Length: 280
Image (cartoon, rainbow, N blue to C red; front, side, top):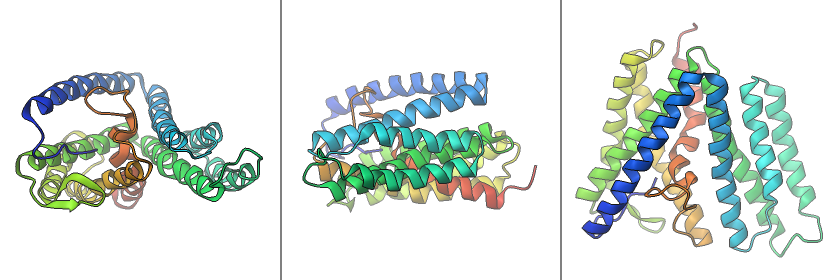
């Protein structure tokens, strides 16, 4: 999730912030509704949102001249998420094998373009990066008390990013990775970690299976890995020459712009939950 530059014009920043807050309120309402309806509804939300983010990635690549087969990648990404939802390791494994072999076979077609090997790599990476993140989020949801654990993970990641956003805008002077993102600062990164840790501690109050120390550990994990997810997406956008992954969310950019840290951190959060949570 990109931070605006510290020297951005105040009026433009205000308009963007108003849009961002309004969009965030709508998204939180949708999350709350799906959580109320249960796992099935929440899985449909994950499937739609993550598939949209994956479509944005492939669409950006196609606009940049690549010949990725987006329909194949989208189907494979959905396959990973469905496999996680039905708790079938076999479905996930078969999907992973199919996406690797299928991407190479599709690169042999006559309309493969001039960069077939690169397109194979992008197709596979998109499925594993974005679709795999969605599958990991789904796997968290399927744990005991998993819906609460998933929402806690999402909110902890989001709060860390919000802390980085505001303190980075106000105090950011030292660039974190200027060759990748001109907006990210060390000051924002320094704010992201304690913000996420505090959010993790707060989450443990409301999630029965999450002890305070475990909540703090979740916050530390998300605070450390979240910026890597942000920068990874920035690296992708810089390579293909786009500013936002899309324009679907006013004030936020595209769906992938909002999910970058979440899909990056979700596999690590799932493993963390498996390791530290006591058996229900």
